[in-house]
Length: 270
Ligand code: TA6
Image (cartoon, rainbow, N blue to C red; front, side, top):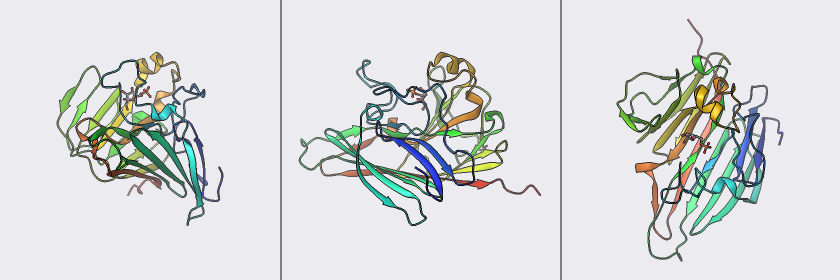
């Protein structure tokens, strides 16, 4: 959809946002040119909604990676004009016993909100789930990119296993396959992209985990729905609740995961 302030696109499958481009700017989200766009197959790029689990299913290897919500058709339950001239949409999915409501705003910024409810009439037992906005960002050159806002958080490096690593106080940079899970993260992250002369600001609420990913060369080649030479132009920075930060709801409880994505120029070099 095209409004005066931005253009955006969303698939009913997975309530999957595939495009967000503020007026007069470069696209903010990245999509692989090799992505499948077939019913029941995951879309490579944009914002996969990982829910109600993240990564491999905890007990059933026959289940899809990153949950089944991104493979199911969601139902549009509302649409509205935003105060800044953009468009907002609301989509629902029944992942019993959990009920999911996704609200997206295609305005001057991209806003996304996942509300999950365990209905009060559910069996009297808590339900644990994981969730992530697995957002693929478009960058000019990953070798020049740095990420601010994670400097003071310890993390787990999941490349080749799981290695606990201490915060190093420096902006994150990329020099090889990168797959990091930060916990207890709060506050804004900033993707600094000198090649596109911009910053991407990622604000979060209701999120304790942040995941950062770039597949680099070998993993890109291994993925049939990811172009072999596309990795320098993308990175994932995911607003999430995964692992030790998974959400637990009792019947009648609700949890909301939110993110707001906007762009800004690079600070002037003095
Ligand atoms: O978020 C990082 C990650 O878990 C990576 O390990 C990689 O598997 C990526 O997600 C993509 O997962 P997908 O199932 O969409 O291919």
